[in-house]
Image 1 (cartoon, each protein chain N blue to C red):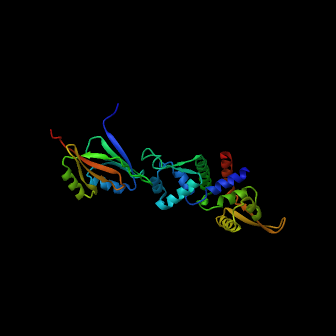
Image 2: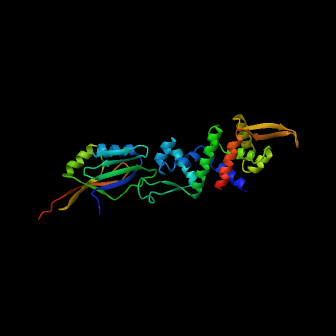
Image 3: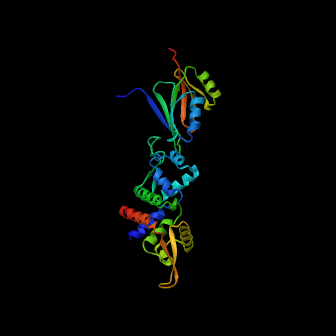
Length: 186
Length: 121
């Protein structure tokens, strides 16, 4: 059950702007334009991303009438947002350990790596664990992870001929550490 | 209890546009500007009376009026018009009391000029 929750957390944090926004919101004082400048994102894109996070219950949008001073936050992290920010920090630490770039940018990257860590080595086993991912997107992500030398594809004959997927030995420690960090957060 | 001075704070949509209006059109001086935090303050003609601005995604114009006293209403209106201030309507006179002229800043916050008239006795 916790495994599923850990995987869901990494999936929830995937996307080009989710982690950057969560990690930058407070240092921008929760205000829209300082946040946009720090992230170098256009106002319309920032707006739509913040709206999405608000719909997911990750941030709260304060109306102009709720704000008692123009320097007070326009957006605040909810309890869920505070939890996800800590998880985002753990993912960021894991990604800097892995040194393969911004992996959470794409959906299902971290869920796939965690599935492999949870000993799901066959495609069908990964699919079963990551239920809402389509076979097409899983195939795409696994191929990309192989190209980035995070995952390796090995031919096996037992119990029947097919491919097994494994984390590369040098990737395993970062994934293991992230799993441990998220486990303790949950 | 109170220290002398008064500061008014406004949410604005665009700091540069606001500062151009307050310094060039109204003729006040920039006190400080923090570009990273998208905030600034201007010093009005009155000592310790400042106006602060911070950018916000959504700006609701403030309708309470901040009023600046002028020596001569007609001259002041003419000068500010020439500097790019758009007034709402004409000068209004409350006999023996005050002359008023209303304008708003680029975000629609309300301001007034007033010239206090000496009552005839």
